[in-house]
Image (cartoon, rainbow, N blue to C red; front, side, top):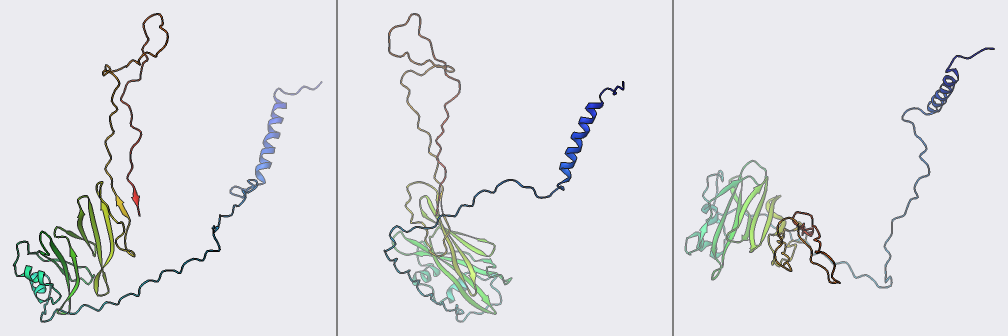
Length: 290
């Protein structure tokens, strides 16, 4: 009688299982596509369904025709080799578009009149800086105003490329080649206007209102075609404390008052409360509207 070595049957079983696994794996190369089952059904997106299809829609509003602005005319009788180092009063005195209150301020003929010193920034990208200044004057009783002026140089001619009214306490800055003017339009609101070079002059391209506190009524977008979002930053109100029904409990654990009902034997048991202050879960978040 022939006997088999111990473990031969188990070895054959393991060999057969290994061959089956190799055969199954050899049918598909690594990275090949595999059948993942049935695909999900494709759902059609909903389409608009009018409620009153018989009502005719009104005509689309017509946009007014764009008014073609004339190119800035050179200041008469003024020729300069460079604007850098030029006093601000020099182009202002030669500008025929200055209003009478501005000319009075230029002559220092009023109490609140002033001319801001000239600043020089390249706003049109030609490598030569433009001249920026502002005239502050009295527009009426307790109503001082200001006008921001920008002058550019073409050859030896000086061109007025921007004249915009502003609040007397306005601030301005340049961001790249953009000119940004900030005006406090309310106790808790600020208006920021961005002006950019456009062919031959500075034009308004964006205006935003930033509300810094409550109680300010703003109309939102001030410029229909070039106005950014209205950013509202409301302060977070402090949580209102809840008055306690009895004397202040001792620090640590507090005892709940005994409920109404029949008297029980023995002293009333105190209900333990976890240590730590109560958490305020309702917190207002800043809102952003357009």
